[in-house]
Amino acid sequence: MTDARRRVPRTDALLADPRLADAERRLGRALVKRAITTAQQQARAGEISPEEVADRAVAALPVSAASLRPVINATGVVVHTNLGRAPLSAAAVEAIVTASGATDVEFDLDTGRRARRGRGALAALAEAVPSAGGVHVVNNNAAALLLTAMTLAPGREMIVSRGELIEIGDGFRLPALMESTGARIREVGTTNRTHLRDYADALGPDTGFILKVHPSNYLVSGFTSQVTVRELAQLVQGEGGGAVPLVVDIGSGLLTPHPLMPDEPDATTVLRHGADLVTASGDKLLGGPQAGLLFGAAELIEKLRRHPAARALRVDKLTLAALEATLLGPPAPVAQALDADVADLRARAAQLADQLPDAEAVDCIAAVGGGGAPGVELPSAAVSLPERYAAALRAGAPAVVGRLENGRCLLDLRTVAPEDDPTLIEAVRACS
Ligand SMILES: *Cc1c(COP(=O)(O)O)cnc(C)c1O
Image (cartoon, rainbow, N blue to C red; front, side):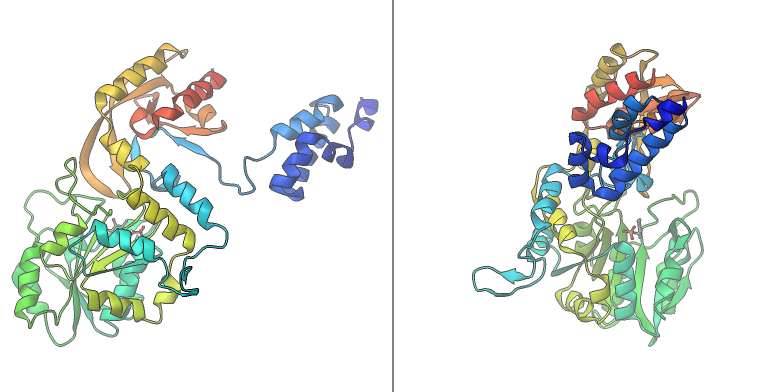
């Protein structure tokens, strides 16, 4: 044993192994040394033989220099916040790679002069929402709301229905976020019912804007009443035409109506109904990178753009590249998951279950997620496995995250791209 310990290969010898030398060029020395050290310790502890150290170090190498690991989302939640929300399309990934070097994000190659930053993404957004006079992009929807409050209501009031004062997850509350700018929330109505006269009574010289929030992650049902965008638009028009802007946070980011989600608001319709400004997330139903999208009247957008804090909220070139490619490229994974035909999902589930031990194909219900369309159920199909598979699948490479239901581990195929089916088969086999 002592002899074997003495024979544990030295670090410099291991770094000369072509596989580890290649990894050093890709990942850097520190990460490769970490994998080597772990393997050497295992050999010294007698867990593996000295001959196995190099192989073990290679196996322990991370996939990339970042600690984030690839995951197959088999949860059936299309926009899964804890799994990074929208997976990007291949077109968006390619655009990111292209833009990752020096790029003309703020430069006109024809004239050799400075140009409008992100003009390609802005043009694509304007084309997607023709009813918007102007568009602007910030870091996320929370940033869009922050910029709106800072620009339109410093030291003044934002009128919001009590039924729309929401918490968006991880303890973040929209009212607290907005009030952090120094603007004050003027709550109107009650949790279940708010009427037009509640808004009308609250309007006054201190009003900065009216905010309507889509309560995207919950439903209030029963004896309820909320005021529509159309009614609010008429109210503020009566106040002297645009003196009090009507801002609508639609949340999940549909740009046009979606047939599966009739109750989910979209930017085009909300603007047509008279909203002055619409805010939305880029990485929910739009299926793009994390971003906050602002659509609205041209002068209003210009005012937001000119606010000193806009610079602190702006997005980087990679986001702009991915956003433009999401808008102009082929349907993103989120759209594919939403539009997948349940008959196709059933056929895939049957085919996968046939090739796997312990598995059966079952029908199930998938969800939109990401705080969107809470009542919408998406018919789906899954590979059902014994519950013990769940932890082993999560530990795999790539990790597979399923959903536990009635003591079974379901791999819901609505959120798995068909091209990932072979990987899924390998992952399950490796656990059985
Ligand atoms: C998700 C959501 C937000 C926050 O958006 P982020 O892009 O995550 O900052 C704000 N408002 C509503 C209605 C939402 O659904």
